[in-house]
Amino acid sequence: MRIAIDAMGGDHAPKSIVEGTMKAVEAYSDVTFTLVGDESKIRPYLTNDKNITIIHTEEVISGDEEPVKAVRRKKNSSMVLMAKEVKEGNADACISAGNTGALMTAGLLVVGRIKGIERPALSPTFPTIGGEGFVMLDVGANVDAKPEHLFQYALMGSIYAEKVRGVKAPRVGLLNVGTEDNKGNELTKATYELIKESGAVHFVGNVESRDLLTGVADVVITDGFTGNVALKAIEGTALSVFTMLKDALTSDFKSKLAAAVLKPKLKIIKNKMDYSEYGGAALFGLKAPVVKAHGSSDANAFFNAIRQTREMLQSDMVGTITTTIEKMEFVTESENGGQ
Image 1 (cartoon, rainbow, N blue to C red):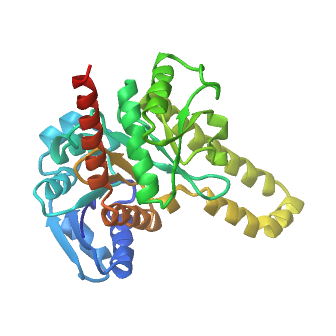
Image 2 (cartoon, rainbow, N blue to C red; image 1 turned 45 degrees about the horizontal axis):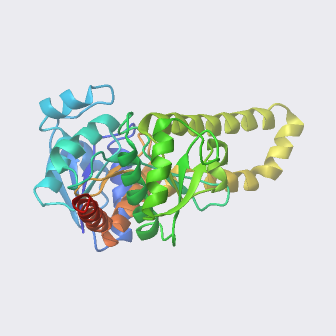
Image 3 (tube, rainbow, N blue to C red; image 1 turned 90 degrees about the horizontal axis):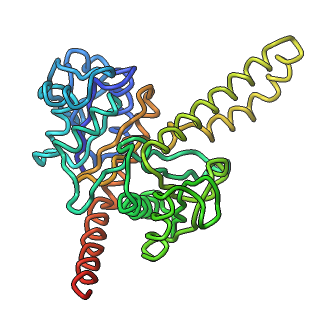
């Protein structure tokens, strides 16, 4: 397996990116890595050259650049060259912790969509109280969506949960304002009927945002606007809760004593809710795995993004999605021909 990596993307690049890759080199002898970026900045963090190739470039897409313009103008940037490695068959997948919009654009324009997929979806895995986690799609690749797009999200999310996360008969839920069948706007009502009538996934109906972290579903689908709002709300709430706990447990001497006693338990909770343990956000619907690592990834978080990408390659997730979509298109064409 061959994975191309944007070594210059993210808040702590290239240090965390290269260190995370070094951990992966030690863990996975069946993967070769291509690091794309400024070689003079990458080499100080290399502990060995085993299974490592470097493509030198000094051009970088920054986090505040307009995605489409940046990808089209900066053809020698680390992110675009990384995506080209996949397009040209030199790599099987790619990972970046850089500009999310630019990575989605590079994925679409350079790597390309799977035939039949109308809109790719950005899909992170969220933690749950029980530790199982769930995947949500879309969280921002497409702010506007049609029922057909959400139906494809359900298919792709279900395949990912089963093939990569090892969930048998993944439960697919539709994010909505209530659990009743007739709840929601025109998009959710039409999507509900489309998924239910298809019988293509294990559909558990509508789910509410307050129940997401309890593990109400293994796959949650929604449009990119709603998904991004939910993503930011969950991240912000988690950060706020831990900040309040820290303030409360360091406010006086007695609180600090209590904090010392509770520290092991609090660490367990923190680790359980740590996004970095689940990898990155995969861009589903492309011809090869494209993974967006968190912008603030440390070495451990980036290593887990590599682990996730490797598992996607091992399970041939893209191949399964491609075959599934081809079959669905055949069924649709047959049904239309019979009318």
